[in-house]
Image (cartoon, rainbow, N blue to C red; front, side, top):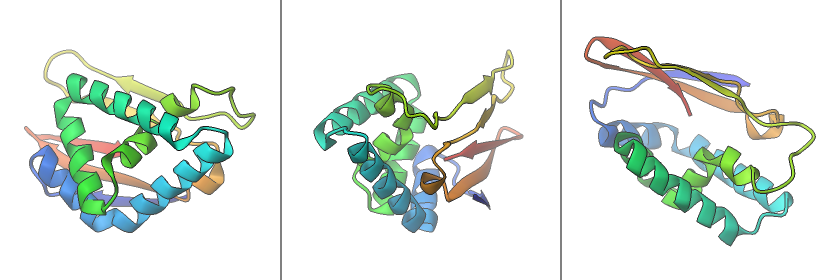
Length: 151
């Protein structure tokens, strides 16, 4: 897997998402297309995937509006319908409605320190090599902290 590292200069979720979508639109579209195809191969009809994706996005929007705004801006700038990028973002939830694949799925760990300190995350991503040819690790700063996120 190729890991692309980038520094994002946007200072708010909308501008960060627009920058990510503009800079990495081709890769985002390829990843979205690959997952939507994979969901179909696994027997999930598009309308079911869309319903799960929209529900997950609504939950994200209620829980972390800044992340939802960044995702929406990324989708718009990449030229991807929001529900399709939301399906990629919620791939674990989408795949949870069917029996597990023998290859497994991703794992995530989050360290959330008390106070105003930045959370730290790590994700193993997917075990389906054909779906994870490239990963994006981007950095941005806020209040003196540097954050990294994989998407």
